[in-house]
Image 1: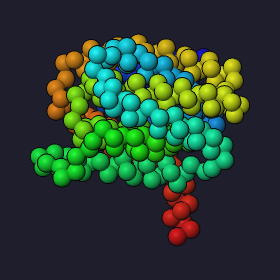
Image 2: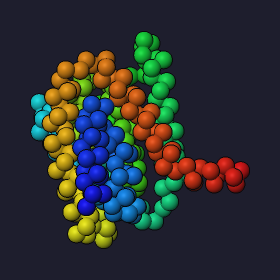
Image 3: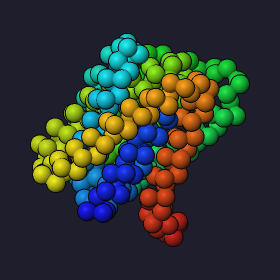
Image 4: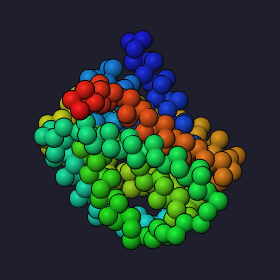
Length: 251
């Protein structure tokens, strides 16, 4: 019981930070959820809880959603998440997690480029192929953190619009994933219980995060987003440290 309470307190803090950093709760939640349900149930439990948290974000940031981006993401999110969930039980995700971790860590270079105009401008249609890849990876390994946040920032939307649009797409993503996991037999009573418990905690945490976000400047938000991506990447690499050590030993 004490273990569960500590996990819920940790989840509350994580979802406040997630609101302030544009996402990334999945990577921080992975080790907490694994403690109470085991590694194999992590992906479906997080899918339920993060789906619920995304619903509350959409409620709070409904007026800021960029529906043009959402429509570009819509079909690719469904297709990618179904394929990823289908391959969830068949492929080793270790290599993918390491690659994603390295990509997230590499975003630290954004701090050095912030005063230089980018030669490449992100357009709305670019989110369709990016969404396909990210939703596939999310279905396969359970969560990829704020992997697309760089694209959202480069597109030039506000902090409220980033959270609203990203969350609207996340509802679609996680709904498709949970249906796929259930069809494949990975959703049981325990998964539902813990997923809903963490989801309820997340919804109250997001309200607190929204209050703090309203007092935050866009520049500070951008810095926190990039920093959270780097931290998420480091955490993902740390969680796979044994596999990385094994690869180095083989080399």
